[in-house]
Amino acid sequence: SSDKVSVRKGNDVVVEDLILDGHRSDNEEINGNYSGAVFLQQCHRYLFRRVTARDYHGDGFSFQICDDIRFENCQSLGNANLGFHPGSGSQRPVFRDCVGDGNSQGLFFCWGVTDGRVEGGQFCDNTDYGMSIGHRDTDNRICGANFTGNHKTGLRFREPLHGYRGGHRNTIEQCGFADNGFAEDGVAIDVRGLTHDTTIRGCHFDGLAGQARQRIGIRIGKQALRTEMAGNQFDGLTDDVIDLSSK
Image (tube, rainbow, N blue to C red; front, top):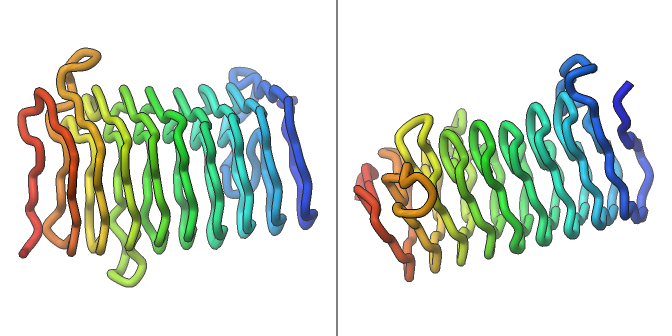
């Protein structure tokens, strides 16, 4: 059976210097809401340092209804589903210098994840998105991360069911985007649905790097409101910004 760490209702724990190999080809797929190479439920104030979750037939790191979970120099590599999965209602997660490569999504903000921080790291070569933010994921900050070679989109804001459930007041800054979106429209950041008060600043969108498949820097959907952009650099793209929103 695959190796994993599973903990319920324990607090104030440090986990460090581990490699968890899931032997994906020898195991059936399992939903990340219930398990993962690392899975936490109703646990708080965990620190993961230099932990690698790889080749699991599900999520690499999944935590549900957990507050103040921190990851430092952790890697989620080649897992079947989500690399890092801050689950429903988790508050203040921190991802510092982490790598989420070769999963379906590098980092997936689930429902109601707020006040999180991504500092540095990379989310590359994922078969769907490098990162996605959506249903009531508010007040998160993504800074200094790199997004390269993600098949559908570098970073996608999902379409919420209702406006009040949107991914509002999130900030993306000083991030790099290259060669993303080649399986769809070549978009680096896609702001969809009723998403309000997004800030994108100081980011670099490179349309020449890799196989030059990233064609659009930022695409803002019709229903999005108050998307602020400042100090971004665009090189070699077909369209730097496509803004479909009503002014």
